Length: 436
Image 1 (cartoon, rainbow, N blue to C red):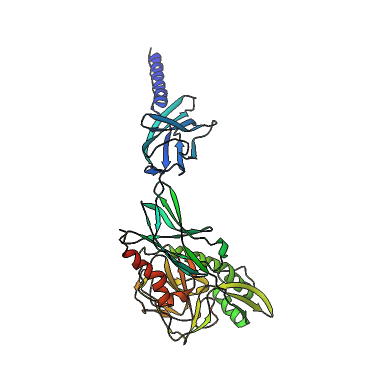
Image 2 (cartoon, rainbow, N blue to C red; image 1 turned 45 degrees about the horizontal axis):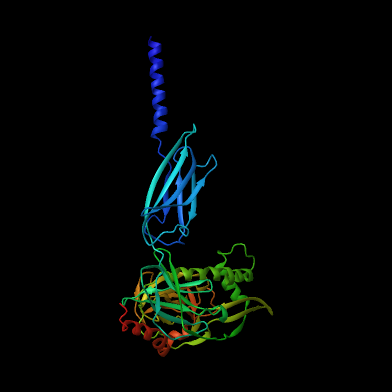
């Protein structure tokens, strides 16, 4: 009798465990990216389905709006799969603008083959109307290697806006007057036929609108120079960069690695610093040029490097080299905030100052820095002293200007008339246009 009772208890326990396993196991769970909010017909939706126990068998996604239900995705999976991720859109859903529900029904199987289904609902808003873009500025005369400014309005909130051309994008920034302003370059290395800048606006739902810009291009040709590499200079470069390139066997090999690989790495860093910008202009008026200096090399100058009578390298110089006395005081070209102060490869000891709207200035080859990242600086404030750090052959300042990381010709920003006609005049026009 005692054995029978024990056996009966065992059976009850087993049944309870099996019952709990089959009936207590939750069905598959789902999540969406984006999780809610406005969605357009073409915006990709990513759904993740996870079966906590057993295999994922199938799932179905339907859209519900009013009395209408439309299936948009049905999937069946082979055995052995615990989770899945699918991407789809609502182009064939037939939705109208307004609220709707995505309902997901997913089925998973347990180890013993029993199925467990779960239904989940996710709320969204269908918005298939793109924003309206109105370009306010009219004249855009852009020199190759230089900069333009477009001022425009957008009819609704956006998640991305700015200027696009070829494969490049430059962000626009909201201004206090209710409009957007975007500084955009005509890159020194882009052929005019590929350069067709347009304003783009993408709203929160993913709807996109582009608007044309009335522009006129001025094609500029840049100078060339031959630089003879001496053994003493190569030894200087090798001493500074040998730890970065331990595989390089000779001073010339170290120079070539620094002049090529490290240069590209530094250019990439400038694009990263370009994201650290104020949406509003911080600068005031014309930019200062370091006083009492002579130019040693101009912007976009093609440099051919000669060693022992043979050309060993070719690079483009993307700044202005300005020489004065040794360790001359270097002033901030305009008001702004320091986003970088430290070693920047070929530029040596370097300071990068943000002036707002993606506009930044670079001060390279310094012997000393008197500011640090995060400092606010005034126009004319001493930020360091000139030197020969990095790839410099002698004491000078490498001065550069970037737009959202793209290096542009500094000369324009030294010209008060150019700034008034092409930059500040347009911003003042927008302020007075009553766009808010």
